[in-house]
Amino acid sequence: MGVIHVTRDLLTVLLERAAEADPAETNVRLSATAAGDFDRDLGLDPATPVLTHFTLADVARR
Image 1 (tube, rainbow, N blue to C red):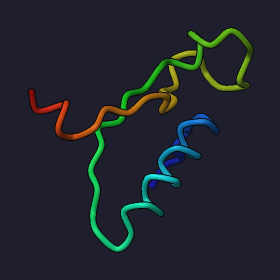
Image 2 (image 1 turned 90 degrees about the vertical axis):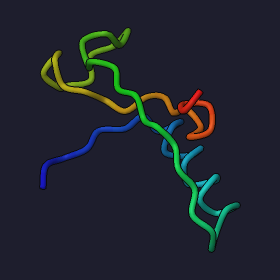
Image 3 (image 1 turned 135 degrees about the horizontal axis):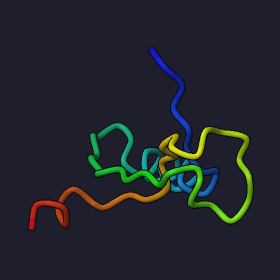
């Protein structure tokens, strides 16, 4: 399994949502931004995807 890169803010929100939903399941759609699109150098190849956003599963289906 490879490394997954995620922004700190997204990870915080996902962990909070998981804690609120526990023990029930919750689904979200994750979106990525290329590392080269950030304002600062992340030390990653510019094409490396970094998880940055989520969409609620209910919204994603519409």
